[in-house]
Every structure is written in C-alpha cells, then in structure tokens.
Length: 130
Image 1 (cartoon, helix red, strand yellow):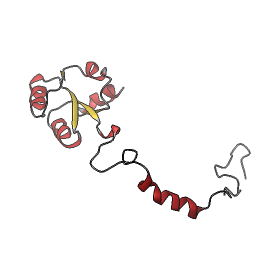
Image 2 (cartoon, rainbow, N blue to C red; image 1 turned 135 degrees about the vertical axis):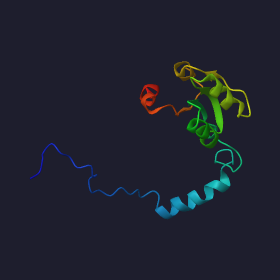
Image 3 (cartoon, rainbow, N blue to C red; image 1 turned 30 degrees about the vertical axis):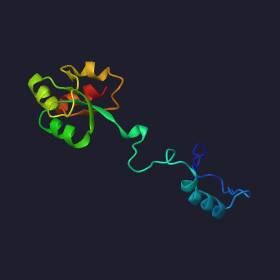
Image 4 (tube, rainbow, N blue to C red; image 1 turned 90 degrees about the vertical axis):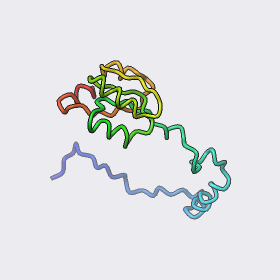
C-alpha cells in the first residue's frame, strides 16, 4: 500500500548529461589545473591555510584535561579550571603565556577561540556546552 503523502527522495529518471562537455574533456582539464593555477590557490605543502590554525580553549586541565591539551591542541588560547594551582601548572607547560580563567563562562565569551575542549567531571559537561 503506498502513502500519497510520501515522496521518494530519488530524482526523476532523466538524463543529466550536458552535450557541451564530455567526461573525458572535464578530466583532461582537471588534470592540467594544478600546473596552471598558482600554488597559493592550492594547498601547497608546508604552507598552512587559514583554517589550519585552530585556537582552542580548555575547561578542566587536571588529569585527562592536561593530556588532551598536550595531544590534541597545537594552539591553546585559554585555560579554565576551578583549581588555580592546576590551571597555573597546565599553563606553565605551554610554550607561551595564555589567559587563565576560573569561571568557564568568562572564557566562553572570547571570540577568538575556534573550539573548546571540555574535560570537567561528567555532570558539568552539558552546562558548559550550552
């Protein structure tokens, strides 16, 4: 039994070919593009793109939080922990000075952070994500 309100997500069986360009012509042109375009347009090796530098903030830097900071974040932009000694210890392990926060809400107000790593106790995760 078919449902009249249900519409298939499959497109109609029509040909979507263009007589102006063949697959062979497209592939030949695409193969030549890296030789014609300047390397700045393409992702050149050894040259990071604008999105390759992701600045992270870290909430909770004791135990697993410190491990997360060392292993998954190359560019730490801020640290937040309720234990000021733990926050200072984590900040000292970095190669540059970063702001230290005791209240995660103040850190989350920063516009220059691309992402946040939360390593707080389980019952705090949801509140910090909102």
